[in-house]
Length: 402
Image 1: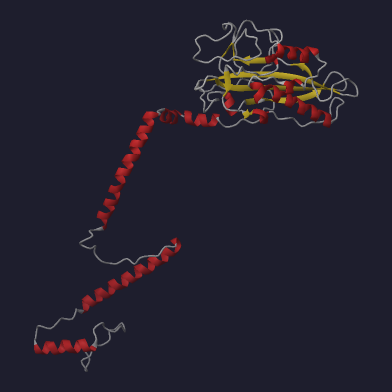
Image 2 (image 1 turned 120 degrees about the vertical axis):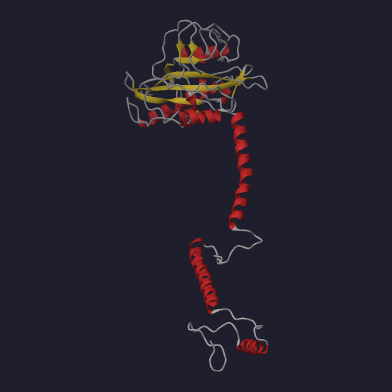
């Protein structure tokens, strides 16, 4: 409606109309000159609808802005308008987006199927639970604090490889080399001070390392450093082993104390020898004497010395070493040496009847292992639940695993 002056009136909301006074005057003039031809003002209902839509757009934009603060992202106003006829509705854009995902999913599916074809054990191990058991079997064991009550539980019959030389063996969970030989806390006992006991424990570990873990010894070298730790006046041990190194034989074989392999025949895979066992000490029967008892198993992964060889075999050596620490105030001793009381051994996967000062492993592909044919009872070289027998075995035994 108009007021008496013909000007547009302000609406009830207090908002000034969008048509200026000059435009309205021109509209009235043209309507008078050409009735029915002038432009028509939008109806009041149309103006109300337009205003309502504008307010809804503003409210949406404000709400989106508030939400965007939580995500630190600028909100774009949402327009209350129908989709453009050129762009098409939003559902068409969504379908095109999903369509682009199909080739990518197909590529992933094909790659997965190819991997399963090339290595089906990945799927089989997952379905049968073997993968989880393998992961559990690789977790390192705690240090051995007491004698086991039974052999290690059975392992999967996986063959060792150059990359995984302990695969399929209980030793995969064992500690490596020298770090596995942990010394007990020394204390005064048997008339010796804690310091004397600690020194004796340290020398015992040195003897074990130099005899079974030193790369030079394992590689077939002469273990002179280990020999120096043996009491030189003890002819039954020191003298016998020295003679054995010079002229090995059935009655004086260096492998009774030293783990040595012929470098012309085999070599160690990598530099790791898995080791497990424990060391204890107690007062001896004589005053001023302490007995140190060490019980350790060493696992050696080996490959033929020939270039390009990739077949891996393992030799397992268990040693129970007992040495006496004597009070130098009571007994005559050579400083810095150990008196060996006992040193039985149990060797798995080495040729019987060969006495050349070296261990000789057999490989799965060997048509006939070197030495005597197996004739004795089967044994598990990983069984640490019993003492090593000090009696000569009946015939050449066979190991149940290596």
